Image 1 (cartoon, one colour):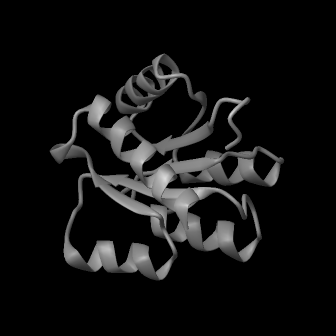
Image 2 (cartoon, one colour; image 1 turned 180 degrees about the horizontal axis):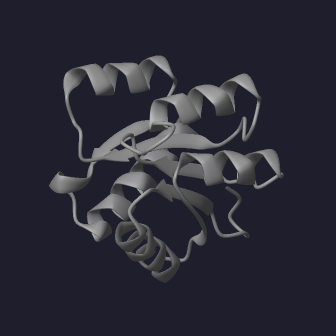
Image 3 (cartoon, one colour; image 1 turned 90 degrees about the vertical axis):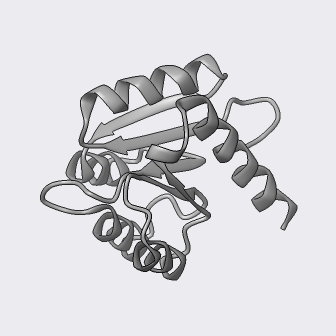
Length: 132
């Protein structure tokens, strides 16, 4: 996340419409964007060497949910320096706590934020993690 290179974000969601929408919004805001349509393609990309400064992922996805994905990324030491941020429609306490246990840097509830607000939240999370 240097000042000269754009921040690279990997967006993972199983909803193609949302994936495209968030990718477009992040690109318009100056981010270098990569996407994965679900956890399995995201894991394959990570294993193939794709790196990101920020991994933005949904929880509810088929085959492997977002929590399982992050557990595998951690276990396999993939993207060790990436900030992991949950972007989900589920905002219940147990999900938020599980995210904290897995070391996520932030939790954004899709239904409570416009795409522009999601970018603002991601930027705030990045800035607060830099300050630590």
